[in-house]
Image (tube, rainbow, N blue to C red; front, side):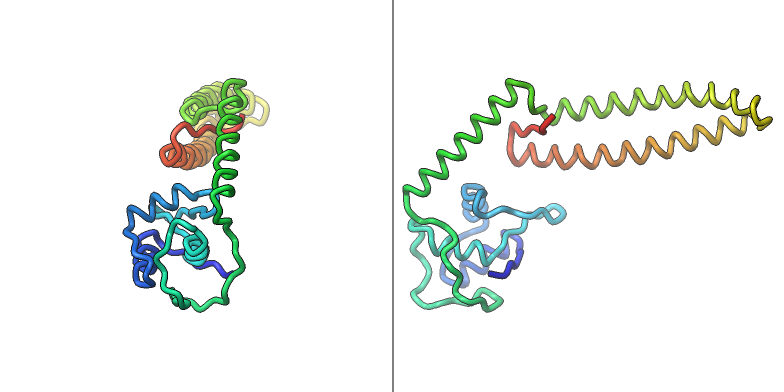
Length: 198
């Protein structure tokens, strides 16, 4: 089955137009509840869902009985897909047991300090940048004097050049770290208590 990623708002509109009347907030809760089967993709500030997978999931969900008997087009024509999602209560209970087990594993990993909260990673990253800056500053002073004596270069110009070089490298490192930390922070907000492997 081909994928077609749309915003949650558009997905709610398409489902409603096809007879599965659902508003955006209800659909958002549904997607959160079934996140294991219906993963979201981040696109800027929006979350996207595969509309074809969503339709198949809702058609197989025994608790939803809204769609008319005949096939309904939601945009792109697709062949009738094979069943992808189990619809029995036993399957639902099995998925819940697996999710509970994963949650217990994460809790145990946190106790064993095998994962680290995002806030600790953030602080450690900022401390590392400050330590590197201090180390580079000390190295510039020492190396500028040594290179000036060894090669007969102007020590003042060398110091300026080395400081610019160190600053550019640190800026790139700092920017990359902030981007990664922001991604982790967003994930933690969407899923409270998120941690990263150590």
